[in-house]
Image (cartoon, rainbow over all chains, first blue to last red; front, side):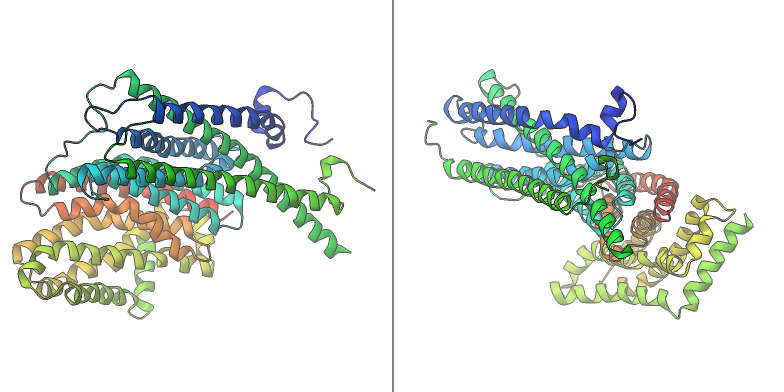
Length: 254
Length: 57
Length: 217
């Protein structure tokens, strides 16, 4: 009796079993891809053709349409990684470490984009491409944490062992990120007066909120799409590893 | 089209950078997926199957 | 309790038997402080202003350099496997090793700070405050270091990755440690650093022990 055909899969095993996941996640990919493409199309149209200049920021508000989604994703993805870390350590969920490994490079890229767009936003606003303010600095530290986690994944031969160790690191990071944010803000007020600049005016009008929300949806859908594809790839990659190891053993036995 | 604001340069650089990196990310994810699928196809052709997929002998 | 103390004693003995490995770290610490004036110039008022920061950076780098020896030697000769199955809980083992490590790495650094104070034109008051800050902050650095070492034990290039993992986590320690010398916000920084140090030192043995268990499977 093989593992794949043991009785009727219940809802939990459909979620947890890698083979089952591969089976049903297939049907997510193209719908997600289309939804992502549509959202980006609508969002970009709004951003360039159908929204006014902000009364405070002028046309730089259009940079916000790509900056805010990436900043939001940089944190959301870490949240996903932290939840998967709990899944690995607490519930021993078979897909949790796959989710963590898949998400890490995605989070790193989104964080890097947040820094890039934030820097371009800062130049006309503050006068420099880089400012050691609370938010930029915390985002930079978050990028370093992502890169460290990616390095750790690559350092292990045994990926299952790696999954649990990376889960520990991810959770320790998750606990520390608020502390880091707090200390960086504190450090910032120590060395310069409190920054007056905020992300947007007191209240965002709908003409600006709409493009922003659409772009946020678009980027989030993009993350969901890439995450599903990467998880599928990782499961297949592990399968390939096992098979080639099996083949090597068979070959050696002959 | 949006008005020619004072900051067009920055806006272009921002969207260009985001566009390039996003497309690069998508490209990498797609390329990686294809690479793994190719590897599995090769192994399958060589006759190496999963035990649960039924044996050839 | 005796097992705990015996473990600390064992680690101390090993550290000093290895022929001054502990003193090499102190040498590195002093050398960092020596290099900085070559980089920024011998202007004494400037050095005085930057001195606490330079001392902290030197301490930071020395701790990062030294953390690899926390578990790697034991892992390589098999003692770690024995310790995993010892009667003493692994968390206590980690705590004992952390204490020994602090005595071997951080304490000599503290004792070497007068040399740095002299080289960097620190005032006595500055030196005293810096030593106090290091005293409070180095346990946190060592605890984070233990976590990094436990996570990377057994990895071929673990010695490179561990500092990369630890550095972001240790930023608050640095911020509050140097911040203790700030005339306005110093007392706040002191409280934050004490709290941070206590929490990190208390919880890191659990996380590190978990990582060691996983690594040993």
